[in-house]
Length: 402
Ligand code: KDG
Ligand code: MG
Image (cartoon, rainbow, N blue to C red):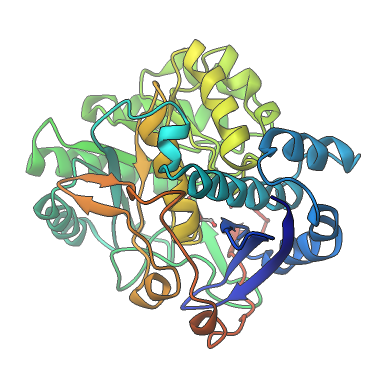
């Protein structure tokens, strides 16, 4: 069997997605997600111009070798654009391997380690009382874990909080929206939110919070400490993570667990965080961290150091990525949680899939391969629309990290 063709499909069924479809000379095909929010066309061009011509004629069964070829062979290693492109190829090849074997991909990864994949949803609202209603809605749907975000009194808008929906759509304008940030307002408000949530929902519901990289290590240490009475499952991205040793300082001060890694593209980005046990959950994903092959390597390293998986699963990760993530989540020994922000009906129609939500768990499809597809005719009806992630400034106008 040989790779005969590879197509890059860009579509915008309510948001932009980039998908790679690899077709073999025997007619079997596989799909991989290549979406990099706000930088979609960079990955599409990387694939079309540089990767696809090198794939034609290769044996699709040689997943590891093709991964190494694309990673090492490019000379320019790592980086989100490169690693997202490699991820798309890798994911599509796993899909093909599953279809050829007649098995769902999780069976090729060692089989089931659990009955279902525990997911968390996003409760977000402008004020505390409204967020309580959102949390109740998730509990009623069977969720066991909920991420809680609210608006901050004194700030007009806050990243990660939508005005009218259960999920938020951060890439909202071609030229980035600008938010204004105040650490003082934020640190004062967040503990009050969680005090109220625990009072209402009791001690067992898993609660999470995303800081979106907006603090310094000492500020994050203070936040973690002030949240200890409410025993969060995790405090996410407390600081920008380029400086991995900065997490030592947070760790020295608080027992609130830490989750990091949605922006990481390789094992090298989290090596120190994992081996020094500076984090509790690693949030790298299939699409942004080199596909199933490389993400499994990261999770295996994490397993040695008591770090669990907690993969990113916002709406900018397509159903193709979600399907792939579920096969990995089901099979690894150190699974923690999977983020699950639902897609819109239009997105679901473009990407027909067999994974399903039931009682707080997601279950991957039992079909051979990943159990997800792309309807190319429907996809063609939704052309690309430029959309960027917002930027964050301090009240005096200084650029902030998010
Ligand atoms: O593309 C960026 C979003 O996926 C990100 O802002 C979502 O932080 C996020 C999360 O935890 O889901
Ligand atoms: Mg996040």
